[in-house]
Length: 251
Image (cartoon, rainbow, N blue to C red; front, side):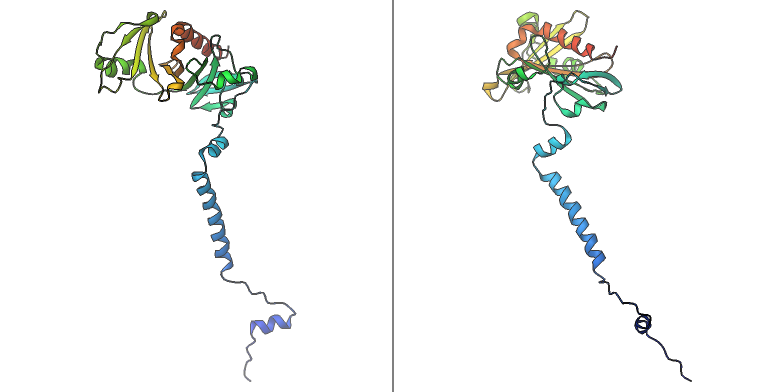
């Protein structure tokens, strides 16, 4: 007697079941949709305005009047910094940071407050705001060493000459790359040397700014910048910044 073969569909029908047909393209379509969505998100992140990305990353200036502190470590060195000295929100969270950007107002290095908001935002030639940064500094040479070895020998007066406000000034000729800058040095009371550079802004409405880059005894880098209009107070500014940084160290 011949054996009858039963089709699977007939068996399902006999059992009262339903047959569901699944399209073979559905799973690839889902994968493609997810890939496009992820790719679109990455593309938006990379091509959107820098302000949007900076806002997400906490890199947009956002001054605060809060006195709450955060414990920030720069290359393992701890600083306890009040929020009203910080420029960015990302600097108000305890933890490791590559840099810590701050600001204060001359002459007393007072922190940000709503009443001084306009003074902190000013970029006028006589603006009283001073910007300073603590950062990881693992360069083989300090800024002072770079000046001594690579910059000072190119000056028209490598030995320097008496300048304003008790500073020694160096002048540079065309073709040196420093002809539009002013360089000053001074011996500080603790025996260390100060090297300061002043540059004019491309926009004359902003005037000239002076900057000192140095390395603290615990190898943390320090940079501060202020308007040249206040150069006469360079001693007070330097001592004030150093004292302020010292006050951020937990006792």
